[in-house]
Amino acid sequence: MSNKVTTRFAPSPTGFMHIGNLRTALYSYLLSKSQGGNFILRIEDTDQERLVEGAVDVILDTLKSTGIEYDEGPAKDGGHGPYIQSERLPIYKEYAEKLIADGHAYYCFCSKERLDSLKDENGIGGYDGFCRDKNYTAEDAARHKAEGGNVVIRQKMPTEGKTAYVDVVYGEVEIDNTELRDQILIKDDGYPTYNFCHIVDDYLMGVTHVVRGNEYLTSTPKYCLLYDAFGWDRPTYVHLPLLMGKDDEGKVSKLSKRHGAVSFHDLVNDGYLPEAIVNYIALLGWCPKDTNEEFFTMDELKANFSIEGLSKSPAVFDYEKLKWFNSEYIKKLPEDVYAEKAMPILDGICESYINTKKLAALLHTRISYFNEIKDMIGFVTSRLPMDGDLYTNKKNKTNPENCKEVLVDCLPILEAVENWDNDTLFAVLKEYAASKEKKAGAVMWAIRVAVGRQAITPGGATELMEVFGKEESIGRIKQAIEELN
Ligand code: GLU
Image (cartoon, rainbow, N blue to C red; front, side, top):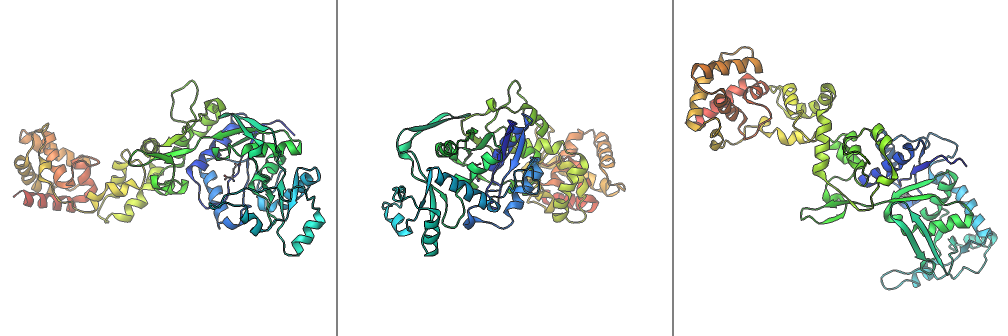
């Protein structure tokens, strides 16, 4: 086999892509690409009870939109296919029989009732090796099966000694072989267990580095024993720390729904950009050497990634940080790409007299994800209750009284404006301020409060008036005057 670095992403099709899984895919991809290696996508669907329709598409879509491109995988055979485990059943059978022939595995006929009787009151209990030395043959197995019996193939674990391996991130992991149970390799339904088939596949597909979540850290000695039983070289193991989330009380636990959106698609639906998500999660457990740079394109990640930068301390997914990254990515979007995402949201909720194009432009540098637009424009879609204190501003020396004077003065001036755009409105109000020897800031303040009706608005007085259009702006000013009376 070639010694080209080969990694794989081996998701089970569960119907959604957890951010932690996406990070695994990313790191696995980057490890290979940083070394000019090969990256394989393999679908692990042998748990037939947990199959979800359309789940493979979710995986393919996610990889596509994040730019994680596989060299080999479904519909892209690089000579190691098929890449969907349910299509590889004869291969697993062949290799399991090989192990039986070599004395490393055996047929087990134990009934469900017998296995249940081995469990304690908590339903926990391992296999006791009852069939281990029975030496059942393939013919015995076929007969037992035909008679309605249970037939599985189990791995024959060593009963003494220790098994150890060195994980790249966690260091040496060792287990006492007496702790190992004779695990099932092939189930009664003929499907292999994950424990078995991923070994066969990783070997046959030439995987040199296994990158995956650390939930497999302590079961990996069992997998190493399978490599040894076959006489194959073990791969390099790179287990990644869990992704954690922080709840409102500051408690940290495995990232889950109670922390917020945890699937890639949920984040995208909220208006996070795939590039920003990728950039952010790349830094959750990996740190670039020799640079403090935080922004990385996929090509830059490929160039900078190295195993040494991986950390074993659990990384905490920080939604605020993701928002910040995303807002920076949104700011950098070309106007037309931004508009393509923002306009449908605005047009969906704004009355037709609202200048949504202008509003979109005002929001471009102010949102951190696209759905935030909905929260930010409540003051546009309805006239909010007025808080009279808003008229008071120290810097501009404004108060309700002098603001009312400005509004009353400006109402007829604005009614006479024909070209209702920001520049014209700005010029008109400035001229008024000069004629009355008022600070332009004070005039703008009064108008902005009257029209916006909230403390902080995206854009100043004249920009808001352009957004609202003439009729609504005048209507809001009239209402404000009435309220001040
Ligand atoms: N199908 C396994 C999972 O999704 C893959 C684990 C591995 O990468 O070996 O957790």
